[in-house]
Amino acid sequence: MNEQEITATLDKLSQVIDEVGKVIVGQKNVMEELLISILAGGHCLLEGVPGLAKTLMVSSLAQTLELNFNRVQFTPDLMPSDIIGTEILETDHSSGERFFKFQKGPVFTNILLADEINRTPPKTQAALLEAMQEKSVSYGGESHALPKPFFVLATQNPVEQAGTYPLPEAQLDRFLMFIRVGYPTQAEEVEILKRTTGNAESTLTRVLKGEELLVLQQLVRSVEVSDTLLDYVSALVRTTRPDSSDNDLVKCDKVNSFVRWGAGPRAGQALVLCAKAKALLSGRYAMTLADLIFVAPAVLRHRILLNFQAEADNVSTDDVISDLLLSVPKPTSPLA
Image (cartoon, rainbow, N blue to C red):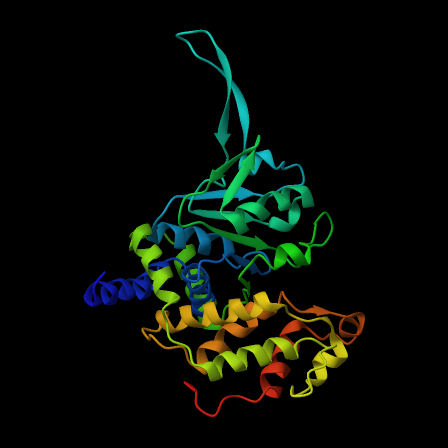
């Protein structure tokens, strides 16, 4: 792509947000975080109470992209083969010979919506692990590559705990971002009532092609980042570890009091990639401090494990991250 084609493709990203806005009222930050996750080539977990249009948001996003889309409703009786596929016995009608053929499951798509992922047992949740990390599926001794691009956008409900299976930390870490979907404002809720109780229907237009998305993913990694900002990312991640022996780090009170395990090196990689994607989404080719601050909560909140004291004092990971961002000294220049 030349510079003009890249600029035209970047303009389509804002068109994607506008198209989804025909169906989804508000939640602009959530939409931006979803696009950031996709541009960075990662997977995304959305959490929110029922009725906040999490599923509709993901399916609407898929409609604006010229990509294949599958939805799996996770239930307690869902089996791994229901996701990745299975072998079936077929007969060659010309020779009468029987043979096994691999029947691909719904994971063989570009965008997979894993709806209510915490309602299915761990063995089925684990079936997604290789697909998410390796972008391939192994069955019967053979490896089957998944289409490119491939994203898992999963949702979960934090309210009901009976009959659910919380994702283990190892699986949570496979998600690039953990996005919390909040309630709409009063004005947004009135607009939702207007749109959803009448006869008007919105038709979404496909804006971005899969090939263009792959180019943008490569472009994200070319976004410039200064050594000073990389040092800041490293300091942020290392400060989340309560047992850190680094004398040059500023201690964060809430980390020392409420954190059991801090974030690993993968968190730093995710911070840089997501901040680069945020810069590109904003039409810039250089990462800034503001990009890091924007993506930090969604990147870190599922990578910090709190202790019992935090639960007793009603302290959340977001509270710890807010204190962390205040405690760690920021670079003097936003571009540094």
